[in-house]
Length: 275
Image (tube, rainbow, N blue to C red; front, side, top):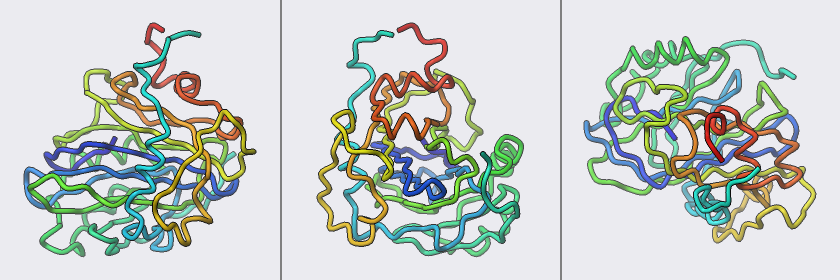
């Protein structure tokens, strides 16, 4: 569910796509990580024109809210299988921000990332992978990028990453699902790579109903309480989907479409499977 600049291992991935208002969306991500090369980074792409320092929501005092969301989703393999552009149209100067345990690079183009990495501390600065960044420039024009830079040889749980942003498509919620942990570009659509992700979606515009899963937050949320939903939908993708992003209709989320029914709306994942 993330792409690394160099060889690494990631486990326990949980990702969240949320709607606060029709023009303010959330992207959350959390995992455990281990780098095999020293300084490394997780690269996430976001469907927005611009990310700023104010886009990053502090989370290191609330380490469990993503895990609490993840507890609400069931595995796809356990199911009985049956049947307007928005946003600012300009590029911003990339920034580097200390964000809890990470040093974060925010860039509106993959080609801007190498210069920004020069401002990351030497201890956490990954080697520049120009093949990977060129691939992102070719395939994700109009997206912004988050590089979460870290350095650890032992697998460690990470605090969540949470950003708020103005989406280029307000009718859908987005979670980056591309996977590649060896520094090479992902193969979009491949079903060969093992997957085990908890994928959660929620909207503060949803009417509470029994089809939605209620979240019991164990953290004192503070300011996060004004952003996070009380009810969510989602699924655990244990190898059912393809190597692709997760993109679902906000209407489906507001209505409480859940589990396999929600997964089946995404042709990038469900097409080609025999249910």
